[in-house]
Length: 126
Image (cartoon, rainbow, N blue to C red):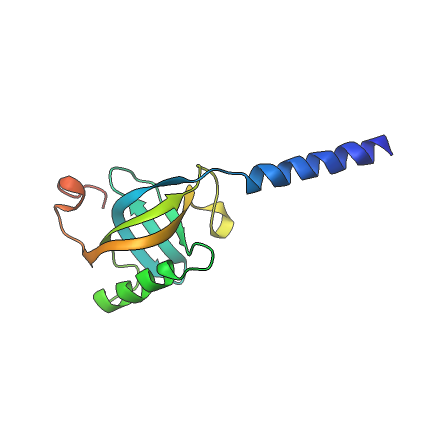
């Protein structure tokens, strides 16, 4: 009985830890792609890939994807985006935990075709 109680306390603790993850608010810029694998954001200055989601009761990530589809001619083509949002702590997100963070898009500030001078310098990530 005592072992069952400790197991239950452990599960509750893990649940609160997952729910209580803090989010980092900010303005983010980088490259965005979309396709069958989902919506992916690569922030300027990193090689990280973040999973893109709608915040609760909003559809801004859906709008970002719609505007993306208007700009590109092929799936997974990169575009430049700048938006306000919240990013999770580092972890494992998206399908199979393949992405370092999840980012919730609150407001799209800029969206356009990718250029060599994105992110303040020549693009070296590809």
